[in-house]
Amino acid sequence: MKILITGSQGFLGRNLSQKLSREGFICYGIGRGNWKNKNYKKWGYFKNINGTISYKNLKKFEKINFDYILHCAGGVSPNASLVKSIPFNKDYEKNVISILTVLEFFSKKKRKPKIIFISTVSVYGNSKLKKIKEETNLNPVSNYSINKVIGEKVCRKFYQDNKFDILILRGSSLYGPGLKRQIIYDVCSKIQKRKFFFFGSGNEIRDFIHVSDFSNLIRCIINKGFKGYLVLNAGTGKGMKISKVIYYIGKKFKVKIKPKFNYFGKEVNPTSLIPDIKKVKKFNWSPKINFYEGLDEYIKWFKYG
Image (cartoon, rainbow, N blue to C red; front, side):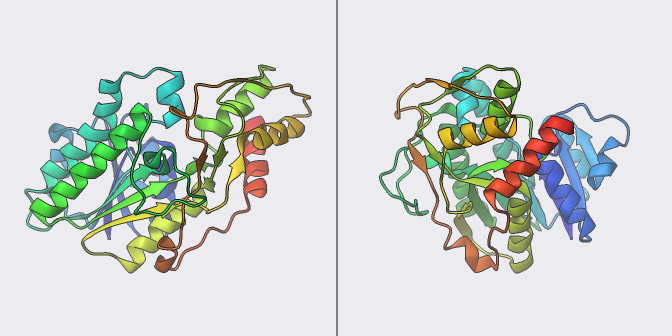
């Protein structure tokens, strides 16, 4: 089975190609980064295009009939788009134009690949539900999540018009060795530098899923297959209070911390994002890695590489 992974040099892309190639899949990649020569082969790629998602670059795969496209390309996270003030048009280019280019290019093929579009639970915004179901109304509050919603709508349009089979996977916060961005990395970096100023209020509740569990889920989806247009939540279904995560990491670094928070309000930083994962379990999958065990593994990697 041949698979194209966009965002090939990113955290999720690398982990997916490594896992899938070990299980006999032939993985091709495309994405921006600084890989040189055949550095991509150590991550399991048969071939990788080092560059943006464009017609010119996609044409290099023109003769290959892919079974699946795993669209991992996109912006970083809701917090990054807020804290770093990433312009809307830049986020739009990463999260919307990239999937639009992929779909337009492959819509011309007689044999269309199945598409898995990596979205985010942050598309739900502020919800009063303890666990958010896929049918919940979308209320994105950051540039990142707004553009993910637009990306989902683009996918649905191409499903309707071009008969693609498309699965939208709304993922929780990823973590694991090798991650150099997002909440857990930011907390580790600040504590290591003895800087205790954090984004948010500390009372936010987030669901963290280990990249190994997330990669296993995608493997299970490919195994079982799907038809039509599907939307699935992906996470552990368990919430962690951010302040509790901060104190735990501080303890592991043997640092006494007095955190200060920069709270923008729930209008831009949802209070709770815990997905209901009943539907995704129908793909014979469930998360295996305990959060604190996974966090200990990550902290060890962060400290010692």
